[in-house]
Length: 180
Image (cartoon, rainbow, N blue to C red; front, side, top):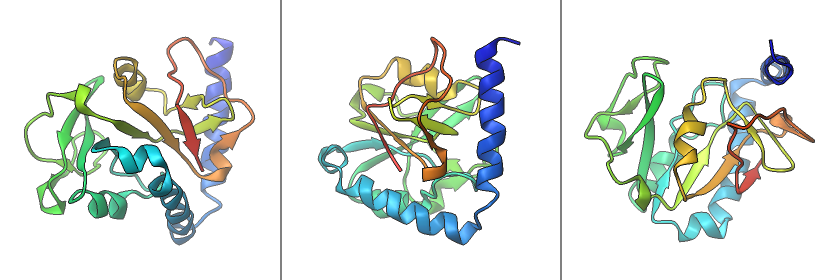
C-alpha cells in the first residue's frame, strides 16, 4: 500500500477514536459554535446559492442549519450516485427521502443542473490542516465534484479534526478556508 494511503488510513482511525470521546449532545454544542462562525463569514453572508450537506452522526451537525437557511438562500445538497455526487435542491424536511448508500436523507426531486450557479460549498471531511488541505472518507466523491467547481470551498470540522498537516495526494482538493 502506498505511504500516503497508509497515513490516511491511520489518521481516519485516529479521528474515529477522537470522535468517540464526545457524546452526541457535545458534538451538537460544538457544531453550533462552528456554524455561528460560518454564519458570520462574509463569504457565506454574500452567497445566494449554497451547497451544504445533510450530516451523518459523526459530522458537524447541519440539519438545523440547512432548515434555517433554505428559506433565505437556495440550498443545494449532494446525493451519492455510484461514484459521483449529484446535486438536488433542498425544499424542506418533507421533501427528504432515505438515501440508498449511507441512509442519509436526501432531497426527492430533480437534479440541480446548474452547478456553476453555486457561490459557496460547505464541505465535510475526516480531517483538515492549517494549509486548508482536506482528507475525506476515501471515496473521493467531493474531490471529483470540487475539481470542476469555481465556488468558494469552506471546510467545517470539530477542533479535534484539525491538524498541523494531513496526508494528501494529487487528487485532494484544497479548501479556501477551514472553520472549526
